[in-house]
Length: 496
View 1 (spheres, rainbow, N blue to C red):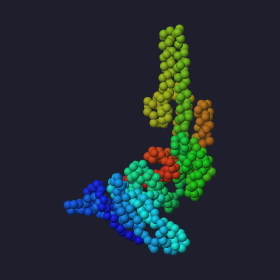
View 2 (cartoon, rainbow, N blue to C red; view 1 turned 90 degrees about the vertical axis):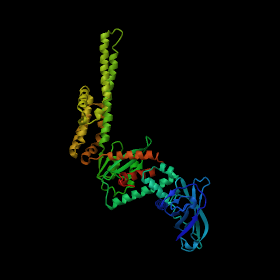
View 3 (cartoon, helix red, strand yellow; view 1 turned 135 degrees about the vertical axis):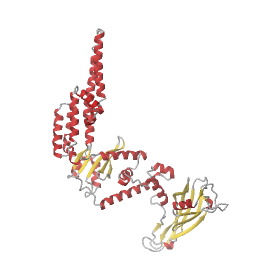
View 4 (tube, helix red, strand yellow; view 1 turned 30 degrees about the vertical axis):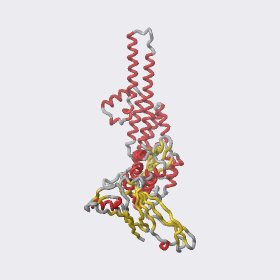
């Protein structure tokens, strides 16, 4: 039932401004269910003046009518009072379908989109409570313009959604609208849940199932709490996010995901730090585990090249100090000068090795002639470092192979040579990683890594900074999945 009631405002308010016909139409459109009409000014000009005392509000909404519009004593807030126009004869008992009567009333404040800038608008709605004349069932009538689960109107919710579409932070929206951040979060949560649901349904209709996955961890609170993230590498969608990084935490992924959804998975990329491989082997026996090449190369650079380089540098530093101990009170000036020169030469070697880090880590084919010549001159005098560098270059060559068997044979020989090198850091590294040979060789067949997921982790960090952290992990994980949706991740140039 549609009811229309007018409330004429007679109270004086200093807020005013000039609006033409176009401005009037725009304002009418923007305020939705409330239609604003403006009186002529004192001179009868065609321009419309925005005086609040001249506003006539026709509140058109099912079963409700406007009864009063007023300003707060400090002129900083507008209040529109609305009451129910529904009658008991228009209602029936939801349980037995018999007649009901009004036995009580209720009142509720709803924040609405303001009619004037910097003047918040609140709707005070009064409704009825009904009771059945037969079974005694009681119920409260709904407020049709109230946004579910909040104390705002649908129009205010659409206002918030407009800000969210422009990627405005919740904190900024709160400051702009004066609406509580938790209410804004609920509106955003609804947007995210809807987008994720639509994305999942669209993929299901296409018959799509993920084939290649990547799994990695990220810090929720650095050094304290972590979460595990699973991404579909082909589509870029985050399929699942869960608290923790232990085996029992990752087990929840397989519990939450339908087994049919994962039936087509043929490869899973991961790093070698976690124990994800055990569960992948258990739940996805047909999927090949592929260890991330960048984690492997990074660990080799840190645990082998870095350790050996610093060991060699420390030897030069210690030798320099040892040489200087030969100087005593009886040493003549010429001998003393010679000893100091030798000590300085050792310090120069120490300095060269300390500065050699990035040159050692850079692919040999990308070094300039001067860098290559400088590197070779140092490697000639440091046998252990030269061996480790050669092993690094061989590792890079193995990652370029595209035949699984060749890669398997190559990695097997690489680990055998590493263990026979008698270089402690290299032997230790080989002993720890040798069991990963099949996953390392699988890179030749699938050519995948966790790089895409690692890059997305940066978006997660940005989201945390924008939101100043998130106290609700479920909301935060939903936000992560929402940000991975293609239309959100890579919006169209015409995106509003």
